[in-house]
Amino acid sequence: MKKLELGDIKIKRGLEKTDNCYIFEMDNGEILKVYDDNLLFILDLIDLDIEKRILDSKEINNVKEIIVPNGAVYNNNSFVGYTMPKAKGVDYNEKERSLSLEDRENLKQYVFWHLKLEDIIRRANKENVVFPDLLTCDNIFFHDNNFSFIDYDGIQINDNKVLSISSSLGNPAQYYNKKYMKEMEIFTDELDKKSLIVLFFLTAFNINLANVGEINPYTGEVITLDQIFQILGLEDYDIMNKVWKLFSLKDKNEFLDKDLYRLIDNYDLRVIGKVSGSDCYVKKLFKK
Image 1 (cartoon, rainbow, N blue to C red):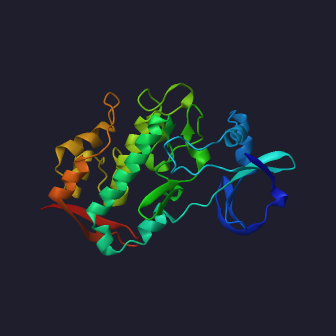
Image 2: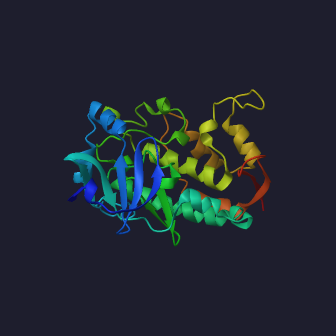
Image 3: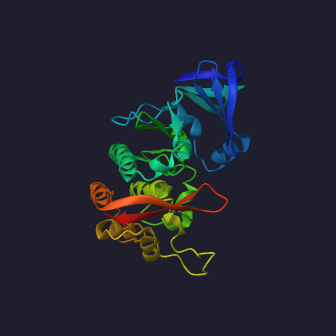
């Protein structure tokens, strides 16, 4: 791992600023991530050694899709960030925004992409890697029908705990149990299986399963899975059962896997409307 001085790095342009970091493109085409001072202070308080994690980073066996840092960055001998190769293609959010109406009804394409992601996550889990931030889709890049993952420091490798999980998973408190978490706040791969199914419903159907159990602001009633399945038009009980297991603490989660082939065989996906004042399309499954 090379060590770089921040003042010696030539910046081409700024790409993004968040509450936690600044992202730049360097003159050599690589990416520079500089942490916010407040985040570094918090990480120090909770004894999360992000500098060591970056210095120890290495390519993960059998998961080449994870982009690994190639340089640790310092400012006056204090660790402030890292560099990494630039991901090819566009992030998953940008890819979704570029889809045509015909693309949005292409159930086969959504299934193909999902099974690609499942394959990556299966291989990663075997290497003791978990993606607590999987649903932050701007960390997933899409190129030539293949995926790659950035934000190495947000990926849980072995027993290196991470700072947060995706907000699209709902209230983090529901994951502080033996199903989703080991000792010392280390997540199990059950979280990845849930994240994948939530991601499929988000991308293919524009439905956020994290809303289950919340109050519907239009009706004042609690949102249930049965209501979601009915509105979507889904009557495949094997898939419905796998979704139900996500909300059970006694049942292990499963991958959707080959059940999705049956979904393609039995249903067409259609856009039936658009939420007023937004870019969110309303979709429904229709039996063939």
